[in-house]
Length: 327
Ligand code: GTR
Image (cartoon, rainbow, N blue to C red; front, side):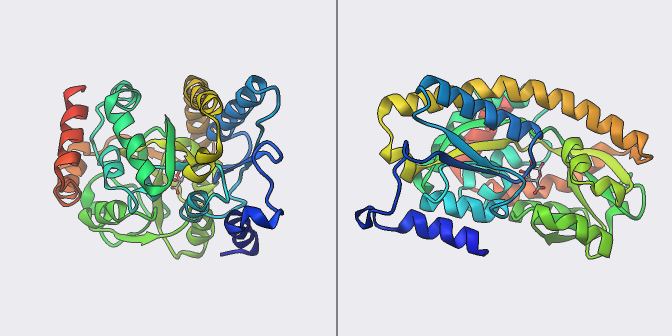
């Protein structure tokens, strides 16, 4: 952990009686995002921050630390639970080891379309997952789109699961993603997002998996020139608040924050759709080989055992059924 992260945790844990801790209102709310300024998640959180500040006449403000300045998502989540950060935008994956219900929207080939994913996450299943975070010290505010994740690599076009054999593939810090790559015969290497570019350049990993905007924005496409449209996971992004911060807010301020989060969702979706198009176009223009003629059904079949391994409780099964029933 870096000195900045340690300091944030220390600040969160310092006793208010010491007189050195600024209360919310005296200081801005602090947020974190692994993506840099301009990325749709960051823009959406900035919009959320503007709404909060307008609606409280500047009493509440948000200072969002973008670009992974405060560390990888696993660490910033920990800081958020401690109250060193008030707001955090992460993918669902780093929440997988914390809350089993988050595994459900991360399952491969669960959502049939973007529309299906949005209806499920805007509806009762989404609320169930967000509410489940509270017992871990996090208030789930909203889901943002993260598109579809596909595999890319430096070595060869992947068309069937057999083409994955022996490839070292970076995954997020979630056992589900480890299992997913193992099910395809690849070697999963959990690694933070910020380390993947270097990992690809140095050959520590042969590839990874992500959506178009991340593949482009992270510059992974400059090294990993084969992008295979497996579109295996549609796990969303999540906006959370620290339950410690939440406990200090008045009910009207909580309402303002919840409403602002909900209203930032359509803004994010608009930005996301535009960015998916431009990111795809940019990598194609840069000469990436996009593999569209692949055996997607074979990938779905190969990943099926992952469901049995990670859907183990009645609560998870109910959620799966609810979501499938909406498809
Ligand atoms: C991106 C996502 C990030 C992070 C990253 C990763 O699509 O927006 O929050 O999860 O993927 O692969 O680590």
